[in-house]
Amino acid sequence: MIDSVCSDFNRSYLSNVSLVVRNSRVYFDTFLLRRLDPGVTMDLEFRIGVPKTREYKRIFQYSLDMCSILALKKSSMFKRWFSTFFEAGNFPRYCPVHPNHYFLKDYNYNTLFIPTFLYAGQYKVTFNMTQYRDKRKTRDFVVACAFYAEIK
Image (cartoon, rainbow, N blue to C red; front, top):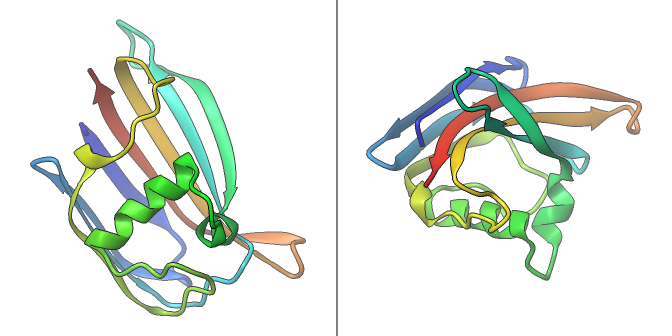
């Protein structure tokens, strides 16, 4: 991983958001202030770097219902990704997610499953987490992060 940032977050949902990447390890720390209920979504976007420019071209975009993914009995690419966080952190395995101090410590991102359709190159992966409220009429922004990585 080249770089990462989680500087944009809703202060009514989160406080003290910290993300550090050092020596192939990820350290994340935050306090969840409000409960996340079914309807929490993560919009993921994968972009590949355009050679000899600073631009990234979108190649995939997914909108994931996080509670549904966590509740899946069978494995999927996303379920495998998220389940690797459980060993290095204290994230709940099911919804709702109650207010608490959550962390990821000494997570080795080199163990993350890389799909074969992602070929060598520079990547930017962004995610925006939102929480539906008012019976899915409106969405509250929770957090946005970006990760920059190179696949060799």
